[in-house]
Image 1 (cartoon, rainbow, N blue to C red):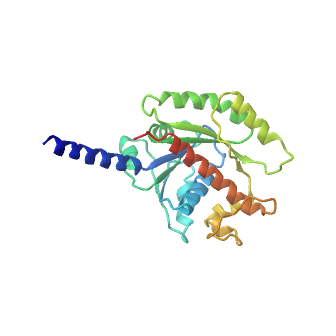
Image 2 (image 1 turned 30 degrees about the horizontal axis):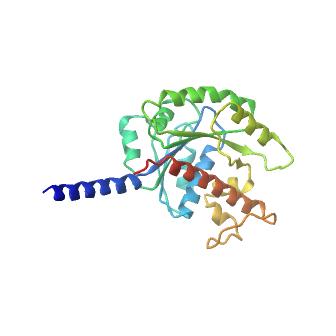
Image 3 (image 1 turned 180 degrees about the vertical axis):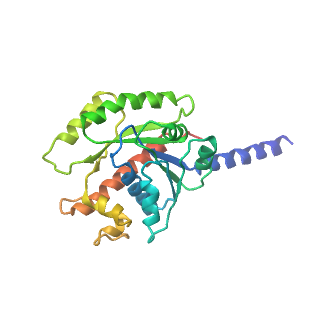
Length: 258
């Protein structure tokens, strides 16, 4: 009888471990300032995740712009992900998001303080706040930190990072690096990869075509290797892939050991 109970316990524990490993990971992007490129970042990260073999679900929480859901409606060519509008912060909305079975759930949050942003923070595994390299962005960071601290008792596992967004691609301009150092000096968690201001990102979103399909010479059966001979578009693919890998790696590092 004791042996049977032990076997049952092992089976239950194993099943629980598998269910934990298969739980969806929720990544939300938002902040206290609009115009930082968060919707574009959500779209490109989603396409990279799909390229990597993951399943993806999108939620548009930004009722003011509805940019993500508008992009999705225009995206007739490739329906390899689903997107829903969710313009309320009720408990039912949070439950709906958490019940999704896709590998990754991406939330496009408003670029302002509101109930939707608080709700996203309370259920996300990772929150990313894109920042343009400017003094105005720096001024929002202390307020953002206080907001994140206010939800820690609800969501103690939340990881949060700042992402330098819409940064210049001109290697002779030191603005990106100076801004990066200012964030680090303030003790704020910063992703090492940037989201640069590359034309292919905007073209891809405007035409509702994956960045991989937007680069004519890109071979989806092979990986692009970083070299000095790459075009700007090919560099854009490498950069968004490296950013996505960094986010995934940070999530995996925070996984509870079984």
